[in-house]
Image 1 (cartoon, rainbow, N blue to C red):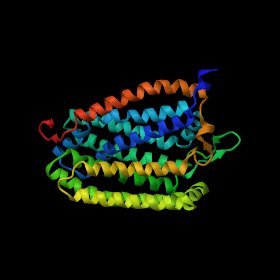
Image 2 (image 1 turned 90 degrees about the vertical axis):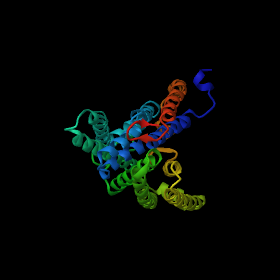
Image 3 (image 1 turned 135 degrees about the vertical axis):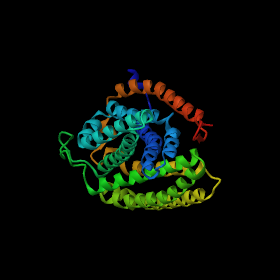
Image 4 (image 1 turned 45 degrees about the vertical axis):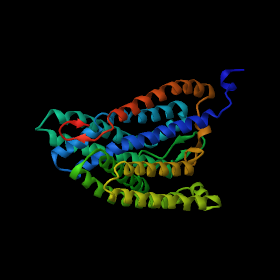
Length: 343
C-alpha cells in the first residue's frame, strides 16, 4: 500500500487548519505593529515615535513570516483556491504588498536621516494604514463570494469585482481593529504619559472595533444563503447569541482593564482574544468552503501524496518558526526605555 494511502487522518482538513492558524497568527502578530504604524499619525512627538517604533523593532519583520507561510501553504495545498482567489484580488494584494514594502523601507531608513525623517514617518503611517485596509478588502471580497464559472472553476468577475461597499467596510473595520491591537500593545510596552494616552485611545478604539464587528456580523449572513442558514436557523441562533454575548463581555473587560491603572497585559490579551473570536466566527461561516460558496477545501485540495510530502516538511519547519518567534518575544519582553531601549 502506498504510504499516502496508509495515512488515516484527514490531510485536507489538517492543511486547512494549518493555513487558517498561520493566517490567524499573522493577523495577531503583524496586526499590532501595523496598528502601531497608524498610531504614529496621532503621536507627533519625535521621541515618543522612536519609543513606539523601538517596541516592535526586534520582532516586526519576523511577524510577516506567517503571511508567507499562509500564502505559500495555500498555493501548495489548495492550488485551485489559489488560482481562483488571486486573480479575483490581484489589485488589493498588490496594494498590500507595495504598502508593506514602503513600510519596511521606512522602518529602516528613518533612523539614518534627520532631513528626510518626516517623509519616512509619512511612509510608515501610509504603508501601515494601506496594508491594513487592503487586507480587510481582501477578506471582504472573499466573504462576499467570487464570480466563479461552474464549468471551469475559474474566476470570471473582472479586475474590480472585489470593490464593493462590503469590502470597503470590512477594510475600515480591520484598520480600526489593528489600531486597537497597536494601542493595547503600547499600553503593555510603554510607561508614563505615552502609556496613558494609549489607554484612552484604546478605550475609544475598542468601542469602535466592536461596533464594526457587530455591523459586519449582521451584514455577512445576507451575502450568501449558506451564511444565513448557518447562523439564523436551529442551533445557529443560539451560537449567534452566544458569540454576541461573549463579544460584549470582552468589550466590558477591555474597558475595565484599560481604566485600571495597574493592568497592562490584559488589555492586549483581550484584544487578541477578540480577534481570535472573529476569526473562529468567520471559519464557522465558511467551512467547508475555501471559496464561499463555490469551492470546498476538498475540491480545491492538492493530491494526497503531495499533501503528505508537504506536511512532513511543515512539521519540522513550523516548530522552528514558533521557537524563534517565541524566543524573540521572550528576550524583548520588558518595557521600552526612551533612553536605553528595553529593560
